[in-house]
Length: 291
Image (cartoon, rainbow, N blue to C red; front, side, top):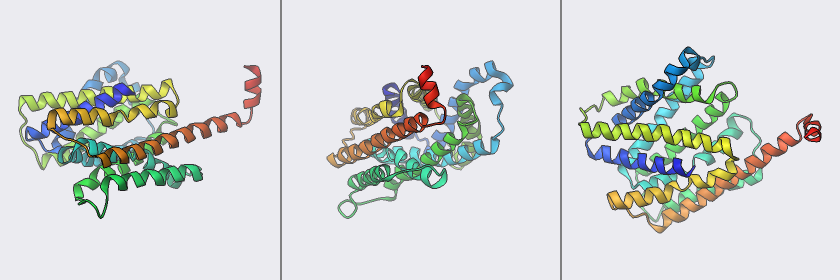
């Protein structure tokens, strides 16, 4: 998870460097998806048609469309505001996912998790400080991106019930590449070789980060590994200071801590509820007796 956090931080910094080379965030998103897909082609070649087998193509398409909206909002936010502030506001993804799971998936979310979700959104207000600091439309982009990212999390939850994880990742990049070309064409500029090299780095970091992120959840409970995901903030703050002379204020750190603590508590409660559900599942006592 720490490796994923570092790779995501490097990816965000590289996006900002590419924008300094004259590339629009929409064009960066297209190249990110193109290179990510290129890095996955060897796996597809090895799997053949089996790697594309799915009965839920429409769901994959919806996931790609919503994911593209999130990506465009996020890349624009990274380019146009301090990275640490954008990352801190983007920590709200688990909060939106918790609310969405209750509303759209019918998951039971009890008072403790609702309280943690509300506290997490108070962390957003700490960072934005409405009435005390000027709030610009750009500052809303990381939160909007988080909202759409949360929707993709819910879709992936649904897909994971029937689809192989690698198929889910493959279809994301396979569909995102042509979809992201559409908005990129409206702002297209011929990239330099250096800009293309930066885009290759963005695509490579994205693929490796997602692999590390996914693998961390296969090795331990979400509540155990999720706290390490928030290493993204110090990584991004350090890189932002060294490359762009960005210095996050104290309110950003305080608000991020509140959001992160809420998200970690939500993950802890979800893990505990899942364990209790498994323990009380019919037949579980018999299985425990055998073991």
